[in-house]
Length: 447
Ligand code: PHE
Image 1 (cartoon, rainbow, N blue to C red):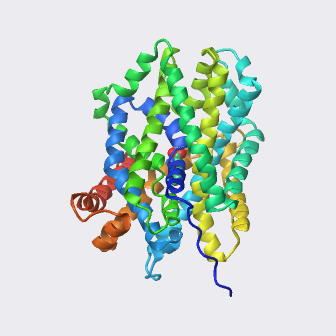
Image 2 (cartoon, rainbow, N blue to C red; image 1 turned 45 degrees about the vertical axis):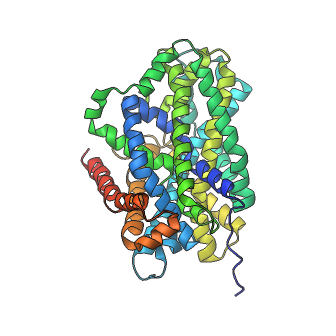
Image 3 (cartoon, protein in one colour; image 1 turned 60 degrees about the horizontal axis):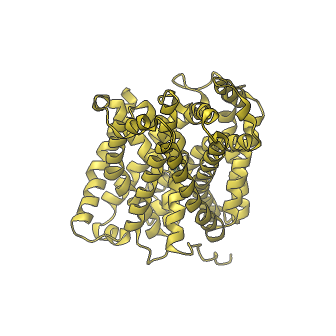
């Protein structure tokens, strides 16, 4: 057997940071953040969310990147390391499966964004009267074919980027898209702020309603959202970390990604809530906020169609860069395990992701009524993936770095000094993160 080719790497540190922001910023920051914040009291939620991001998100992101950095390999081998007989490789497999399952329904929602982008571009929904958007959305998702077409396009575009490889696919696409998406979200927010009555939306997002803090569900929602939005626990950060060169400083990169992702969510909130409030709509609309409530807003907004096209480009392409990071996780494992080419791996894994996502895509029509806890198929899988599997992934990462790695080795890989910051990192990983994660899981089980 010939020697395997040298492992791929990022071309530059900036490319790595942009790709990692691309992994973090996606549907979670725009579609999910806005509706979860809307349902959980706005400002109070934001406050707890930021605490979760700092206390849990930042140390775990650094830990996940470091695991890949040190092993220079995919999720399975990174956790497997020297002791293959132990159960740690199972942690790697769990993450490879988690990213695969997550992507299966993520691609369905991303497909809705692609569809709305195309529809607004040709002008279709602009002709609807106020109040008709809910029926428009319901008819679209209940169709037995159309959602599959858009889901297919998302998976196909994701596969195309993966086939391009680490430098010429993932890094190149993120280098172009992330600055562009940053500009679009800032422009949308500036436009929303100029609307009459925008103040109520801003107040909702930034003025904490302290009574919301009495509901335990707000804390659970904030923790779950932090994992999902930062992209922790599915192995995507680990895999991206494994493509960094030895000199890459991980700690400042993690800080930049966490700051970038949080700013992205907050600025998206500034773009969304003022418009919702200015038109007297309900911010606690749930998952249909982006697809039903916002179109109602775009309908009456000056230059609303332009706003809509920009918004759905943002949503669709933001989702694409996250989908790419999710698909790279199982692909990296399979390329090494089976010695397949990148192209073959991406095509076959993409086909599997598409097939697994079909029930999620059809769960609003032909397959309606199937699911758990009274939720549909897509929401059932989302609930399990984001509230159970990602936190379990995060727990494994915290235990692996906090307890299994020698302290000095972990610090050296992460690029931290042995001083207060390193000590704090270790403390958060060893005690705080595991306790908080177990608290979420127990809380969910009893909710
Ligand atoms: N962080 C992505 C988002 O906010 C989703 C994601 C989750 C990506 C887990 C990678 C890993 O949309």
